[in-house]
Image 1 (cartoon, rainbow, N blue to C red):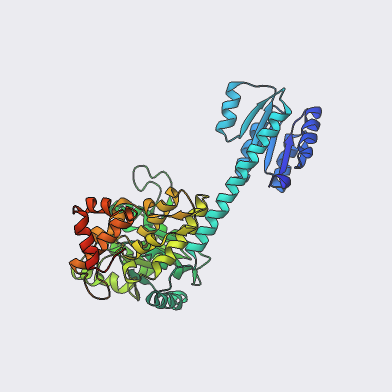
Image 2 (spheres, helix red, strand yellow; image 1 turned 90 degrees about the horizontal axis):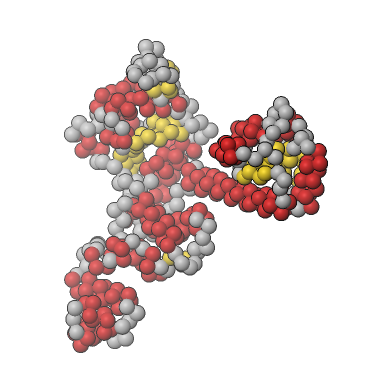
Length: 452
């Protein structure tokens, strides 16, 4: 980046300007210079500079005004202040407003070179992080639901088929299975893809706050409502609104939501004139829907309005083949985010993950891999980087395998093998951990056909 870096130098002292231009050009930068703060503002409007070196005290337009305008135009440009009027107050004010550094005249050229290099490094990192976040958000948000499970593939086919149909969709499944991902998938495969997508957890607000979030309010509707506020229903017009945990919505709010869906209009809190909206509603819950309707938690009429198409997302434990695939996806994602060269997951870790029930589903797997990347000391995630409770999986978890429950003997063998692996095959140490003598351990291994 440094060889292509674009630098704007602003100083009303001609000699100082020429010296800085000469030094920066010798460093290989693309340099523009001006003695006028007004001209600097015009240059900033037409060109995107990586670094701006500006004098603080200038007539008409000073360095602070240039800094302010730079912050309005660009998030990634760094501003370095240079002035002969070095005071603590002006230094503090410049830094508070976002200046990268403050250099006092007379300055040393080596110092300026060093500060510029450090500022360019910060610019580079900011742009890299921004691009990475955009890439990851785009990769996750639009089309890519990572799976090779047949049932999930069929669900994706259904979701893609109904996406252009404009009908409301109700998604159910355990927490962490990816219900919001499916909602985004539907949105981005619909004719509303260029419109807004808003999501809200209905269980995160009380009735009053939820009404304000969804429907907005008029100015003066209540104490503190000094301005009119549009709600998410209105803001999502032309796009999609995802209502997570719809069964947690208070009954009175369900009535208001039903009217929005039926009449395609919203009435702000404190308002008298309804506002027309064009919004697609995608709702989700981790509850049993029939049971929720039966108990009155979810209004039956609202259920019918939302449940035009129903998608039931299976838990991760029901699609084991996706565990390695998702693990390596999250490995790649967090290795990039944390700027670490972690490329592999050990076979032991994969085996452990495959033998785990994942009550937190995909979200829990993501957290496990994120932790593994953060703690990894080399290119591979090992068992040492897993949460403590997961390390003890083979001791505490009794799971069905191929339709049957493991016998006590099978569990004992699995535990013995796990302990032996943890202690590097040291049978004396393993027998101490198991609470038996070495001869008893030998007998158990012989019984299971394990001689070495």
